[in-house]
Image (cartoon, rainbow, N blue to C red; front, side, top):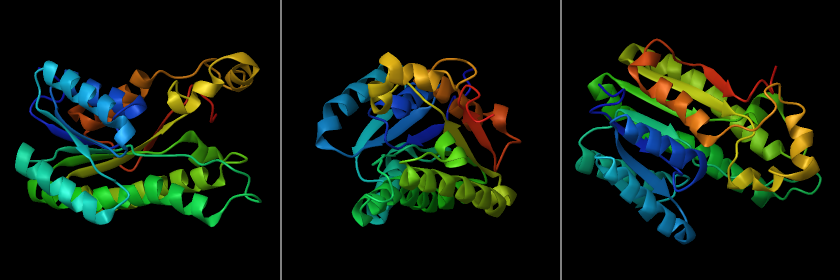
Length: 251
């Protein structure tokens, strides 16, 4: 039997990168998948992913919506419940970075990162916990970052948003554990995605890899495997934890 057979999962920000890998991994393990994307430029990729998921024999639907907008999240989750019937797992993956030294950072840059990275986690979690509480079952997985654990010069907004996710995760785990709802975070290190493509080759990449005990960046599938573990019954006694998928960078 597949690890997520019969389960319904939401994955935000899944048109590419880690989110796409999670959606595909979940579908291969039997989960129906509802996923979001936010920009018109991602519509083609979202449609392609929807087709890939359906080809795996599971129900799938792409939603163009903004996880940083509370009202939009309410509409989205209600539609997922109507179309899919339930929600077993929610992966809060939507995220951006607008790196800048604090001296040069604008309030708008700070607010944009907080809206997408941190408020989206509140928005989605707030919406999915009611059906999960009714079912007395659920797994919420929040995508943090090793930068939220370590900090990094030029990334104060990103680090603060990702550190906030860890604190939020621990609190929700304590609030909802009695209802058999688990809430965990994943903190990836450097992952081979569009966001890190500029580091892939050359001296910059080697500099970062030198600080990673495993000596390489992660593949998106390696992060997705951690999410699969937490979403499945294999992680049934794990809540309030942060799993770092960083090759040892944070040691």
